[in-house]
Length: 119
Image (cartoon, rainbow, N blue to C red; front, side):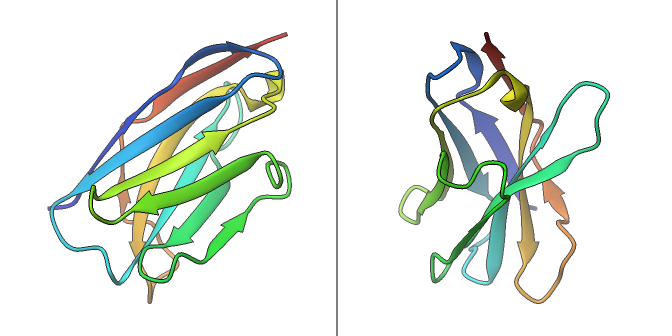
């Protein structure tokens, strides 16, 4: 069974940085896409970034492009999201998710980690 456990959230001032981690377990992920999503209070969950586990191809939402970087460490079975130049509007619960390459549905989700950016 796939398990995803996020960590690294916290409180940071605007302009600061955080690095989120997502420890993945339960299977090999060579045919998976790993994604980060976020949900702010009163808003719908939105896509942030994704990475193809095998080839490392990445894709970002326009709102974070150039500020956030997604990466993965195959040896540690961990996906990272580096958050730079943070803005108050980046405040949200950040979720790690996984889907098989052949699907568009993220079937596996972590519990989320809170990121709060103060102005």
